[in-house]
Length: 352
Ligand code: HEC
Ligand code: HEC
Image 1 (cartoon, rainbow, N blue to C red):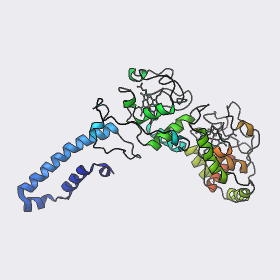
Image 2: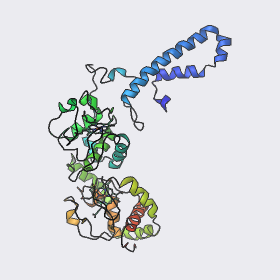
Image 3: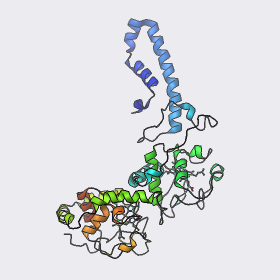
Image 4: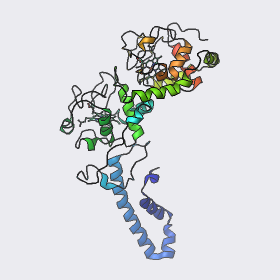
């Protein structure tokens, strides 16, 4: 894996050293062969040190292919700030946001950012500031966090998608000397996923950049996601009969707990507490501030069929909903989830 990422020239050297049998070299090639090997090894070591330093400086995420060859040492922002060939800046994430994968963004953030940041409402500042409600908020202005002078100089107005894109692409380019020692997210889709997730960490997420785009998008899916309401019902009955609540629970823990609690009396988070949701009046959890998108639908009970529709694609069910979750596309998996939700209730409904 590491070898695969080595620049070709170094990789060739590694191969050369590895492929040469020392005994053979002594016997047949004599000193010259050995000397050649030593030089190769020396060059290799020097190369590896340079390469390693560069790798560490960039510390590219394991699940993300480096966009530029690792050997391009001159591009190190701190080493060559005045370099004329400064990276041209990140690709825009605006066209990607509507379709971004919030669940992936969440997983990425938990892996890469949680060491320094908390994401819940009222969460403590750590090495970095709490990031609840950061998109659209005043830049570098979270209460109680002491920011570096480097970013204070860059703070102007509120975080737009464009600025968040640039910051996350390379914090040290955005604000040389920033205290956020993180190399940046160079993959554009990953940046879009992360920003789409950060956007959801709010009681009032800022609108997506292209509401019309996201709408036509969800309508495309909606064509198949909102079929005649009777057709899937029979199917759902069969799926519920075979539903596995344990699988639903596993998925819930993986994909829903960032926004929802399910225990009795659990707090509302980004989304409402879900205890007893099956059979209850929809979008009516006390103390939760629902989006205008779902308010017109509030009060109608959550039957299994209706939940099935919602969970298949929240955005198709209620365009503009704040539940920025792409939906559960697999029919059986949705049934598993409904069975699990139904277990978490004082009075589970009899599922069809
Ligand atoms: C090694 C610790 C560290 C890691 C890892 C880290 N950050 Fe930060 N982050 C910071 C610090 C420190 C600041 C404050 C910057 C300063 O004062 O220069 C910050 C600031 C921010 C801000 C601006 C917050 C504001 O109040 O305006 C955002 C947004 C942000 N980080 C997002 C992320 C994301 C997303 C990730 C993961 C992809 C991440 N950070 C990873 C330490 C970190
Ligand atoms: C990124 C945050 C987020 C994730 C992830 C998420 N939800 Fe939600 N969920 C919300 C929000 C916000 C609402 C309220 C919708 C609104 O106001 O538009 C909601 C509403 C709901 C409702 C309706 C609750 C009610 O009061 O009637 C159900 C059911 C639900 N979510 C289930 C799930 C399940 C199951 C998952 C995982 C497969 C999930 N959610 C993942 C944020 C999220």
